[in-house]
Image (tube, rainbow, N blue to C red; front, side, top):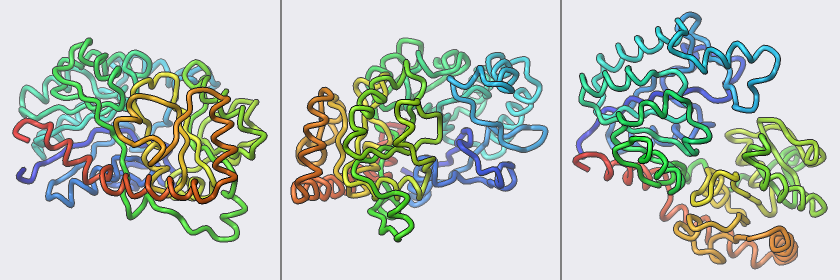
Length: 372
C-alpha cells in the first residue's frame, strides 16, 4: 500500500509534570503509550503520521489531568467531571474541535485514528471530517463501550468505518451501536528493541526484584474485583505490584509504587513469575501486558480465556489458570522449577517476536483498511 497520511487523535496519559504543555510534548507519543510503537512501525513502512492532542487545553496548551471513572468524586475533580459529561457546552472543548478540524483540512489524512477514551471530539466533528475529507475513520479502543466509552464516543459510532478492539464481545457491542465494522484485533504487541529482558543494576534489583510481579490497574472493584482477589491470594508467595492508580488496602503491603515505560519493563524483568489477571470486563480478549510480559522473557501466568488460546499455545508460550487454587499451585510449581519456567519464558518471547510485533500488527491494520 502506497504511503498514507495518518492523523492520530488522542489524549496524553500520565503526563510528566515537567512536560505537560502541548509545545513540550511535540507531535509524537511518549513510549508509555502503545501508539508510540504504532507510529514507529507505520513510519518504517513509509507512511506519514501526525498527532492531535485532544487533551491539550486550547487556551493554555497544557494537558488536562487524565480523569479515571472512579476518580470523579475526588475534591477538585467534580468540575472537570461535569465539563467532560457535557463537552458540547465547554468553550475549551469547542475550540479544540475547531483546531482539530483545521489541522485535518491542512494535512488531508487518508486515515483518522480516533484513540479510545475520547470525551473531547464531538460526533458532528467526526461526521463533518468524514464527509468533507473522505478520510477513513478508524476507532481503536481496548475496552468495552458499554462500560468505558463516553456518550459522544458511542454517538459517533455510525461514522466509524472500522473499530479495532481487544475483545470479541466488545467488537460486537460497537456493531450493535452503529459501527460499520468492528474487528477483534489486539491493539498491543511488542517492539523487540524495547520489550526485551532488562539487565538490572543492584539498585534496580532492590526496587524491582520479586518472586511474583504484577503491573496494572486495580480499581474500581466492580471492574477489577477478580483481579484484586486473585492477587490477594498470592501475597504469601512474595507478591510485588506496581500501579499508577489507587491500590486497595488489602494489597498495600505488596505495593511498590508506579511503573511506566522503562520502569514497567524493569518491574516485569525483575519478577521471577509475572501474573496477569484480566479485568472483569474482558472475557474474550487480551490486555497490553499479555504481550509485553512475554516480550520481557518472563514466565506469564494469566487467567484462562478463548483469546489467549487464539494467540498463544497454552503450556508452551505461557500458562493459564481457572481459579485461585490452580493459580497458587502453578505459582508454587514454577517458582520451584527454574528449568520449566525458563523454557516457557523463552518460547513465549520467541513467539511474540515472531508473530506479535508492532510491525505485524500495523500490517494487519493496513490489510483491514479499504484497498488494503
